[in-house]
Image (tube, rainbow, N blue to C red; front, side):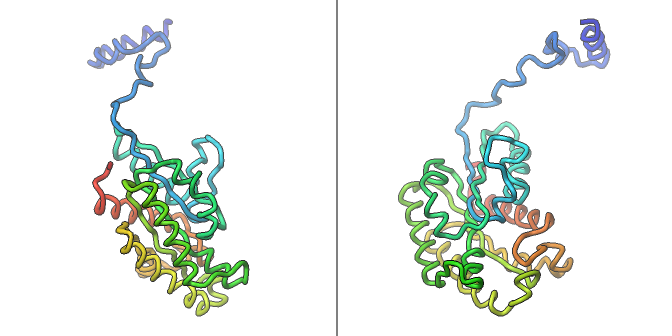
Length: 254
């Protein structure tokens, strides 16, 4: 109690008497947990593979639940930029996922969440499956799978705004071992993602061009370490472009 009295005296002497009246016996403002507004909560959901997963936890530990990649960076920046707005961010990316894997869990991990903004990044594992002959599916099958996923989403969540992120690679790691084959497989899928973004009137983020442009500023391994997964700077590159695109394409917060 003596320390708290001295604290009050210090605050008053500093000319902050209004703040001093809020300090409780524990030394904290009385209404720290009071909501700042009662508006609608804007929900943003990130879906995809390991690039979105970002090493996230699958519990409620906020030290880890958003991972440590672009989804985390976007969430932290927007929460900070829009203090006082009701926003919630979810990361449901799972390492290794293809479009078919997304389909298998789409109801629970997307439709049931009812996001206002849905971000999808998928495709590189579909290419990986072809390269390594693990449940390979053609580019046309990829088109049909992703088209069905988007159709389901539009029907179930007609008001949800969708962001589609282009899959990308750089000639490093396993990609450098067979660069032509990787390029021949990912290029048609990149074209399909762009085409479907236009067909379903979604925002589109051309990440391949973004990473190639970034290589004019620093070597490829500054941005991506194994040809597929971004370095920290690469995740920041994605996050900055994601935020810029969403603010341009949508009224944010929606």
